[in-house]
Image (tube, rainbow, N blue to C red; front, side):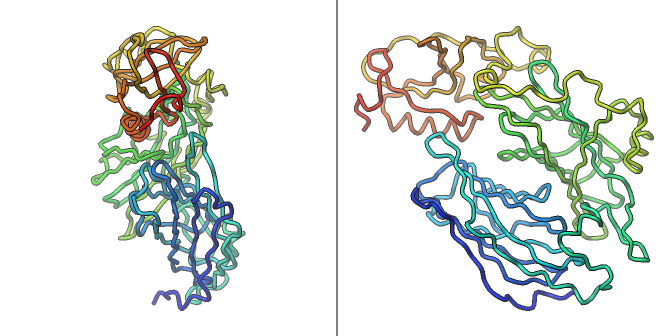
Length: 450
């Protein structure tokens, strides 16, 4: 019979340093757990006056997985050995309690240190806070397995990172296949758009599949081919779910990442994993990334590649001149998709293309919300057309900058609400309020705010 956790040696928690802005968190965890069992972790967040985007992350060693118990108003994910808890809008309560479970592989022993990072935005600036001291948890070997199979946490890598690993009769690890999911190295096409191709081998007997991929900052996610999946996105995580997997033994998923205006594009460090059911149990396997031309293979070649990991010469590489976007400054990243004719992608997508109107002078005191500023004017293509809140954007030229704003608003409170709505419902995360008097920009402090 599988052992349960016998007792908690101690309940350990540590607050954060630097609580001068009213934001802090603490972690609580048992001091000991028996391998093969799970331990409950409690994250308590004192959010101060934070309302919008916030994120908690925690890295775990190989051999440990995490599952959500309760995360109010948050998106919980565990990919590439990292716990991510993301809030687009924080709950109204001042103190927020999150619970999740960390599962320990039955072959482990030793000790782990649980740390964590809380990231949030204050006055347009991203800030980070970390635990002053990690929590130590002792892993007691499981007495119900062959003790020759027990390995220290630091040595777990040698028995494999994914659930594609089984143990043979002599206790040695063996792989049943090279991979269940492979991601082709991202391909950059004109206008800075990134194409992602994934090849999936359907696990035998499964009736449920879930694929999750992290989306780098500065990009929006658009599905191209989902093979019948229900597609959704929450914050920086794209999710595809099959309640009834495709009939085929292997199939592909394709999506694109489109650069977002007024955002710096992060490096293409994409993490992913797939969850499926097998023999009545839920299993998770990581997505492997390879320089391979998946779309050029036929079905038998794709299946052979997933089973062996061997790439025939004619399929090696991704056959593209650019496999990594160039590093750009904020100003350059803003203009990645502008000042050019409408692309073939935009024509084929059927999305509208609108031209920005010049901001007209108003009278009296009023406010607008600025969403972008660039050195060169451009047409608002799919970006502004995709978001109702940005359809009324206007442009003005000031000091050599073309500034794009939404409004007007007659009161400061209305402007605050619009700014928060834009940040919550569009990819613009640096929107801010500007004030006008008789058509000229003035300092907000120069006009009556309330």
